[in-house]
Figure 1 (cartoon, one colour):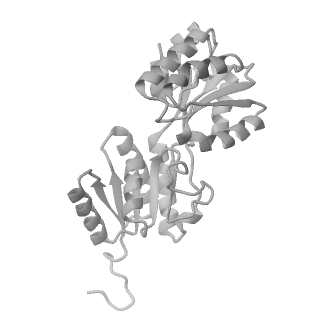
Figure 2 (tube, one colour):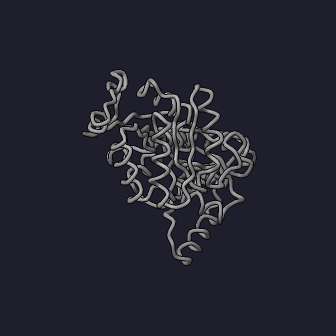
Figure 3 (cartoon, helix red, strand yellow):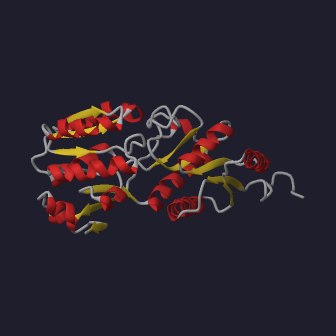
Length: 303
């Protein structure tokens, strides 16, 4: 029993429901990064982890369990877990981590003003940073091509504005069907000095990705991948992020929410720890020299 005016240690604890769709190393690194930052400021915190499933019975069980603990907020790792939270707990403050394109995914209205009961740490590498790296690697870069579909169309205008700010011209070509790829690549090859890529699920299936990588190499066009995995398959280079650092960002946002800030008033963050990856074999094939300053800091070199 608590004496009057004294808060019970149990009632003062912060309860955070963590939603995940897997236990991959990347997911756990993100979670551990967030937990470390949260515990620094809130020692009285309890994390309740839930792995979301696909069956309706499992969904109901998780929803009931989360409601029972009455969490202070939700911490979601990845897009699937974030969507689950949006579908079932829109009334509970939510901080996401390791989500790509949160605006495009419909989680927030904008990165600056999320506009709902949710915000978080994305894994988006700022577009201007991507273009700055591209200019270092291809000094004569003036026109940058990009292929896109309906799913990534809304990303083109802001990317074009970022390119213009760096005295580059973005040349976008929409692909409605993979059969249009040969003509699209030929069109870009005729007018650009490099091709940038978006993580477009409707475009980069295994077969199309292989075709794009083979043909940009044959045409001698520097191709910037959207992840290190694409570099391993043959893209010239890519910028990647550190999952633990993304977790740190999410943890800092969680601390702000616990202190009383509203999620919808906290800007979504982008990746702030960025790794450079390049493919040495591709660089030699298309006769591009990776600057020594980038070679020295490369996280991974694929040969």
